[in-house]
Image (cartoon, rainbow, N blue to C red; front, side, top):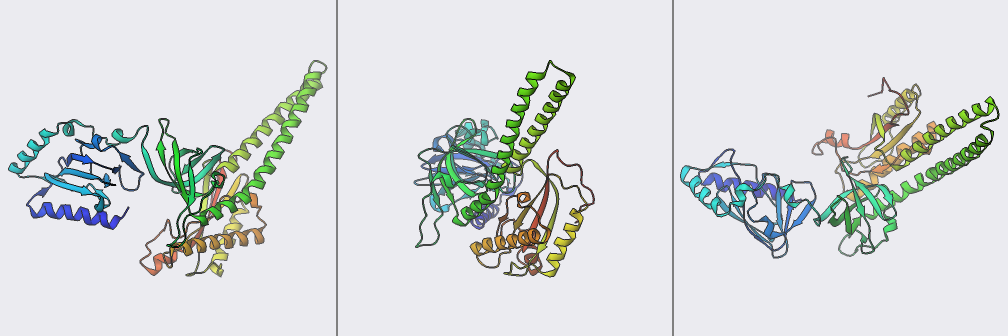
Length: 429
């Protein structure tokens, strides 16, 4: 959303109301007087935009914070704080302002008379999401990261956390990269390129069970290369664990056969049966660990985060950064690290363009990984989802030098598989 344009529109509405002598207080905002053409609605800024039927909007009670946008031939007429406001396609997006006008008696009476023309506006539910969220909704630009991949579907999760959504793939699903520049168009891909760890956006239709049937899927080619690197790292580990699991299951079947044959012979056979049962329990625990280790971060608890910083435009570890890593490594050696994994995530400030900052943040993350693996011989199967977020998720304002210095960082997140390791105390800051 163009937040600057939205802010200007809100100020314009408030200014018009103030110039007319209308005081601000908490009262009804207004309702939708008429609607036609293509109309899109957001419950609030930052959530997925939904295409709604224009005739269903008529009489809808307005709620502060919701956002409307008109598409092709779209026109929306609102009775907003006693004044008629027309929203057209050229206005892009129109947020309902939070200012509540208290009209003088004459204007309030006029507003009440106008409200009687559309009684549905006075009796409609305040929960506007109930009107739109159902089967057949059009979902546009739902963004997130692929957390789980199945043959005909995948699970998408927001990068900042929250609930996951299952996206269904069909033979009509279109998969392409984003356009880059005026002379470089998008590139078509097969659904097999949708990998775990890939950042993407989805257009489609919501189903009654909450899943989304995808019509279009778009992603950046740099994010695809990152997901492919992640797949190259994790797939061998997953294959090795699955092979060990198969061997353990075969051994369990062999032992179970021997136990069945000798169950009634001696007490020693009974003891062997007990041992086989214990082996089966341990094998199941190993299988559960393998699945949890590969399928995502949802089954891990955070232990601590070590942050190292970089100079502007640099991916080279300085003495201070190496010292911070060494101090953290010394602390780790004093802990029971069973079930521990490490996620290394790079960031950048807003200096330079967005694509360059994504590349720079990935090189910073790789520099930290190389230092830890080569100096401390860390097994690579303890590494989970290395990533470069570029200038996203800043921890400080980028307007000042000190703020930008804090954002040029790599976060080393230490996590533990739930239920495997005990509590950890004395973690470094």
